[in-house]
Length: 286
Ligand SMILES: Nc1ncnc2c1ncn2[C@@H]1O[C@H](COP(=O)(O)OP(=O)(O)OP(=O)(O)O)[C@@H](O)[C@H]1O
Ligand SMILES: [Mg+2]
Image (cartoon, rainbow, N blue to C red; front, side, top):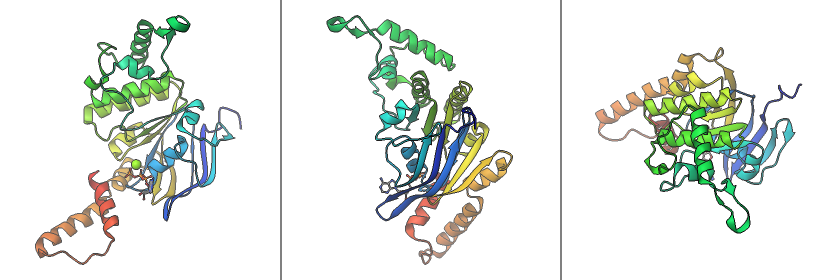
């Protein structure tokens, strides 16, 4: 296989246990260069656990993890970052009172002068930030503006631009659009498309089929810690996905249950465990 066709990230039969909980069992997936792969599944399916393994937060208990065809053992997220794997979490590690520029460079500031005279080169930094954001189609008024004044979508976009600038080859996003309105989610999805155009491979976790379908090239579906497979758009129609993600049948069942609940005044006998009910409920409304 030529270097270009080697998947940038491969997971082979990965398992992860938390005490008695099987968070992942025998999960395999691959991420190709320049694609957006959506990771889909119910609450508790193991999506966040999988990306935490890929981003160096936890080691897998079983299985192999390869980056650009070589087995890796990451001890920390910094290790993953050094291999070009950047993860943007929903609760971003940004400091609201600090400027966009300061947040952008946090810990990797360009400096000017040597030794005692070494200081943060703010003009250069501002210019870089403005240009990087412009490259992604974001025109900010003032890079000195505190991050706290940006909208949620803009903040996500700055985090994506930062990962791109620092050389990410793989960008992992855990529900970047879940707290955003339609318009802001559109902004973030556009930056994801921009990142892909720059050759970056993206893993996107979302519960929203209307976000996943337009942007995704392939879709990996997890269910209770196992992979149901990876599908292309040709293999998974928009309707199949909407039906699957909005749990069409389950939603009808739930409606019926809630109706009966109201009619009977006293609770029906429990069939599913409370945890299963909660997790299904969470998915319909999450
Ligand atoms: N640190 C942990 N300790 C114990 N159990 C955990 C831990 N992290 C995850 N789990 C369990 O592993 C399973 C998978 O969790 P995970 O967070 O990966 O799901 P998810 O697909 O990201 O769900 P959601 O859509 O709700 O974010 C769940 O049963 C969860 O309770
Ligand atoms: Mg999660």
